[in-house]
Every structure is written in structure tokens, then in C-alpha cells.
Image (cartoon, rainbow, N blue to C red):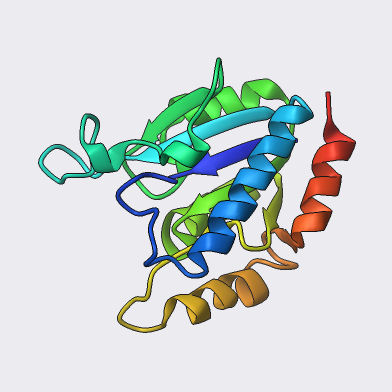
Length: 177
């Protein structure tokens, strides 16, 4: 199993997120378990382009400190929603030969959804732990409704397994190298 840490960047990791404290706690718990069990951990950051305030070199672009990469954990940058839009990421992931992907990160209704769908098209088995993706309110739904829409209706049974934190930790333990 591979842990993908998506877009948990300083500019969007704050109290505007649905269940912000739970999100931080769950993502850190999952990351620590993955490291303890020697799973591959891959980080991806979203770059909105120069002058956007959310690009390489900008403070908001940096990965949130509480979940920052360590050692030789891989990092990739993407300029579109799906992580697979970066060919280097896609090639690296394929080179690992592991089709089990646990995804944590931001934003539920944008980059996480795009990556889940792209991973599904590539025949990955996708796991989304409860409370480990989040989003903001938008013009059509509040953040809670958006989170539940994807995690309880769109992804389960079609694109991914949406599991409890406890089940995710058990999966990590069973997958240790």
C-alpha cells in the first residue's frame, strides 16, 4: 500500500476546512502509522502558477508543517487537479508495482476527487480514510454536505473504499513491508 498525501499546503490548511481539527488529527495519525510500518509515502503539491500566491516559492504553497515530508519521501508538483496530470508522478507510481493507494488530503471536491477517478481508471484499489480529506464551503454546498456527498455517496462502491480511521490503520498495519 502507498500513502498519497495530497495538497495539504499552508494556504488552504486552516479553520475554513470541514472538521479542521479532526482532519489534522486523522491525517497525522495515518501518516505516522504509514511511516512506522515503512509504507511508501508520496506528497503532491498543487501549483496555481506564478503570481497566484500559490506557486513554488510562495509561503502558501509549502506543505503544512504538521505533516511535512521527512527523509527521502517523494514529492511531486501538479498544475491540474489530478495527481496523475504530472507524468513523473504517474510513472513513479506505476514503477512501484503496488496498486493499493490510500489517499489523504485536500480538497475533497476538486483535487481529491480528480485523483480518485484517475486512479480508478488506472485500476488502483483506492482507500479513503474517514476524516482524512476535507474542503471549504462553496457556492452550492457547505463543506459538510460536500464532504458527505463524496465520502458517503459518490466514491463508495464505485471508485473507492471509504473506511473508518480504525480500519485504515489496520490496513496500514497489514501492509507493512
